[in-house]
Image (cartoon, rainbow, N blue to C red; front, side, top):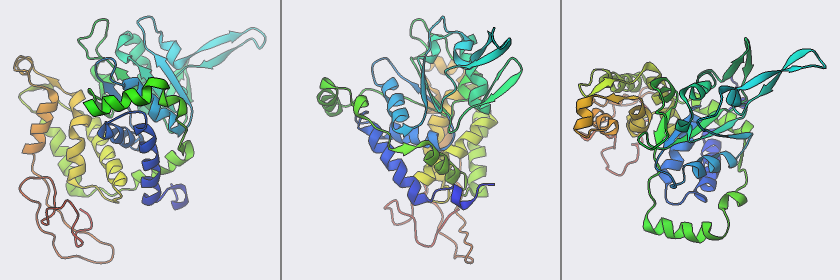
Amino acid sequence: MTTYDERASLSDLTTAAERVREAVESVIEGKPEVVRLSLTVLLAEGHLLIEDVPGVGKTMLAKALARSIDCSVRRIQFTPDLLPSDITGVSVYDQQRQDFEFKPGAVFAQIVIGDEINRASPKAQSALLESMEERQVTIDGRTYELPGPFMVVATQNPAEMEGTYPLPEAQRDRFMARTSIGYPSAQAELRMLDVHGGVSPLDELRPVAHAHEIIKLIETVRTVHVAEAVRRYAVDLVSATRGHPELRLGASPRATLHLLRAAKAAAALAGREFVLPDDVQQLAVPVLAHRLLPTTQAHLSRRTSEQIVAETVQRTPVPTPVPQSTAGPLPPAPPLPPNGHGAPPNGHGHQQPGARRL
């Protein structure tokens, strides 16, 4: 059991996360929402898939996040000739010892950057399955634990790009969230020319958090409270995708677990000890969309999984808050507004003093 001394306070968490955010944003111009999602996935013990066209900074984001944390980092360049043993490792026979010696592969690091993961064959892609789910690698009948914290940040080009192998459903399901960086604004691109024109900001980036500090922050995220109503709300959202007429494959139970873990991390980053429906709503698209398979008719209608998830969020009823407190019962809080975004009646986006948590 984790003791209080092994965890960090919420103030420590927000302070450390702010340092990492500032470090990453010094490299990635004009994409604060993408950086925040990366931090959320890190603290939620998940893995991040960055999918976009070439040249928008996918690998740069992965490298910036890795270098901002003082931990071991390995980069894997996925190519068609990449072998599974290049990722996991291989047992080599030592003639002097007359025994096999295990040589760890690139996956034995705390932050693993998989560059252009969909350019490798499915056989090589599958080498990450065990490590991403169980944080261990099994070679020749022996199991080797991976160091913590462990996170895979993979980049990939869109599936229709030449020379790519689309990730199978089982592989995509192991990524907690998928994001796209997109093209920068004109002002951000001008700043990028000034900053990146002479020297790469990655060369000047120094770690602002330690691995043991990240582990404590992760333990703090685990203690964030999730009310029964919010858990049911997450289950309702995921269940709605399984019977959706425009989807031939809905989200898995693992998706529900990832959605709640990410919501807990988002709440902790906001300085809260409890999860709100807003946290679930804001993360529904990045956590669920990449796991879904639209029907052929949906493809012909140019309907994307992101659009289907966004509409599902709008249609799913939002739970009514029920205040709880260890100090005693509180008066009932006013119901959520019709817009379903959890904003309090004052309309300023701040929580009412009387409503402590769901």
